Picture 1 (cartoon, rainbow, N blue to C red):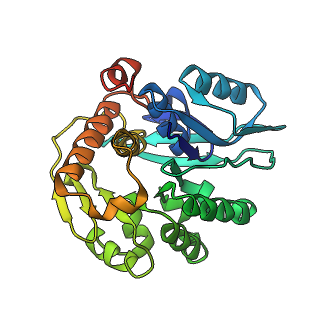
Picture 2 (picture 1 turned 60 degrees about the horizontal axis):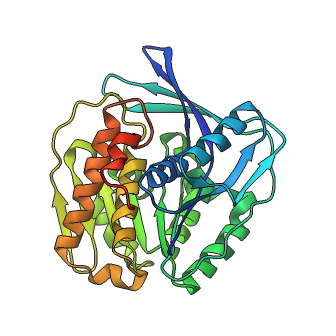
Length: 304
């Protein structure tokens, strides 16, 4: 059975509306995706480090309760990473991050052919992890695992773009599927999704999927360049939308037992199905303060 390995950081999200805290959730972009996948019945491992403080222990318990394996989680002495998310009038978030206060070595898995690897966000740009992460990604590619990368680039990182961009481009060069938002690509490359794809093609053969909120979704491959409209939705919070969209992509790829070599040649109807599923997942999450698919919603799609 193929497995999914989700490499990222655990974060405790505290949500503010009108400058008042209203909700708190276990989060982190890749962790959010892993929880949705666990609820969908997909064998998924969270790969990362978690503090052994109270929040860290809550996080470990939460992952296990949602069928996310913690076999590749290393714990450390210190405090958990915290994110303050301030929702604006459009229910989009602006973040302030408070890093974890401890470190430990990472434990990377041995992946097999057609396993799926997801990595992204600030985790994928860390200097202290860079060498080990690149070694792992090269090994995963050699084993013909499918690698997905989501830059999840924050506006707060813009002052550091000159230093971060070479790492982002190297990450893209190592992935088979690049997923990001129009805001990500505008911040990183200064251009539209289509122009970004043209730039990416110079150093990567990755398929690209770009979300653009109410403006729709773009799928860009060597053979297909298609824009999809999305149904209107009145969001409560958009915090988990992108992460759950990613879960929809992985869910569809996993169900079809695809290899990375097949991605560029997949027909348009397949991508129609990917986008339809991912949009349904993302819009469901927008209707609550949750960062992941609800258990009841996921049960209708669950892989038995």
